Image (cartoon, rainbow, N blue to C red; front, side, top):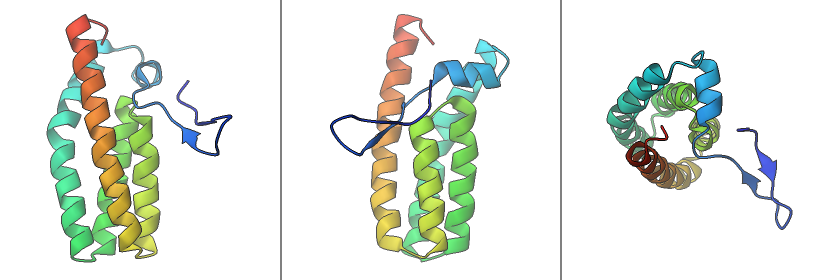
Length: 129
């Protein structure tokens, strides 16, 4: 679970938005710790993404790359696998100073965060988190 797979009808890589099982495995099954990490993530990541957009607009590739790495670690810790892949791509684009690609990836990252937030909210309401 959580591994990318190719869709049979296209060459798109399909990645889970939230891999709860993988996150719990990394946390030794500690559900309370996962909940704490998820709450922290939802508070901190919008500010991190804002900083990333600011760094991209100022063409500060080293800052952008560092923020992408920070986001990568945070996303991996909670099982946000889609965001992990995007953070890696943003870091690569920052290294090559491809700011147009960075902008497109940040837009996609914003959508991924919205999907993740919706999934987490639905799971909290149903008691499945």
